[in-house]
Length: 538
Image (cartoon, rainbow, N blue to C red):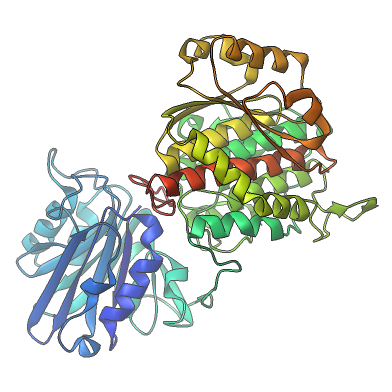
């Protein structure tokens, strides 16, 4: 969490605005910067998302020394006083991480600023003093120097032109090459780093689809996803992940166990360290910086990682990587990275998501079976908006699905929690009878995700809910429409894909859109839901 950006270039203030806006996915509880202009320093600290109007100062094109920060609060409340930079007698610091040996009941970044003043900016002493995974950048007003520090699993990217960032892509357009700073410290110009910069900074990327929100654009982009590589999985395997990536792992486990006759365990990364892991390990992390996943795999030997950020800790730790290559996912809620993770695992199981009609393409084809069916769902957003209107007033939901639709139910419930701020629980359909049915009445809708091959018990589950005055929404597809459309209060039927796993992924797009439209109708920014960040590094 938290994002750091700094510059010692002409127009540094506006460059820092651009950099922080690109880093906003890492935190948006507050933002701030310190800028030097001659002997004067200007300090800005505000709550909320990065506001362009805060980046205008007298003669700001000539300001050439700035460090800035976007915050996701880990220590200290979300207040202006706790926004970064924190300061102590001419030392200003912006920080990402948790200082484990900071005194209890002390805001660790403020303690770090005091430490810098106490040690008179001696970067080596401060580096050796602090404990934990931390990255920070500090400005010494007296010397006008900017120092960059990375310790533990945290890293920073520094360029020869004098830029620093938590994320390589935030540097796009500012320089061509960068160093990665790991367990070390340096000035912002990289003077203490050995050798020439060896990492290419990517070009500025424009979204392939433009919509009112990034989340909606990224939902739409799922229709055009292409996959040419996937993990080679032939033996029993443990998959380590968190959040949406864990749900993707669970989804893929049904395909792998069905087609490969192997055993697949999907483990919460935070709990993996307490389990006996097998020989074959796979991690899934869109950011590549998920601390729970990093901790789970430290010292575990070789592992493969499905990842979207190639300039990350997990990319470097893994013995083999499978890149998602879906482009930046800027909305906090995972959409296209979830779908691509599912596609990769289905391909590992020998299931192609890339055919059309009667013509079967090779596994590495780019002709997506998902495209026409996702586009059909997108063409029917008026129907989805109507459903959102009917259910947006409820505060509790049950999401139910069997087989590969169980992790889809979990993912749908997560999206409702993340972006619509409603309580939702996902579970296997029959599990509802083992406790959760106590919640069922007219105030708690049940959303069923159902595909061909469902068991007769699913119909009984729906009847059991309706007999208790429960409200039922069924997300289905045309092949089973006759069996279900008269049972539910609301039915949305997608077109048939002709394949089990791709069908569930199409139904999941409906859940993504429902969460999106409910959020918008509730006045919530779905790209930046409260209390969340895209990159969970603590």
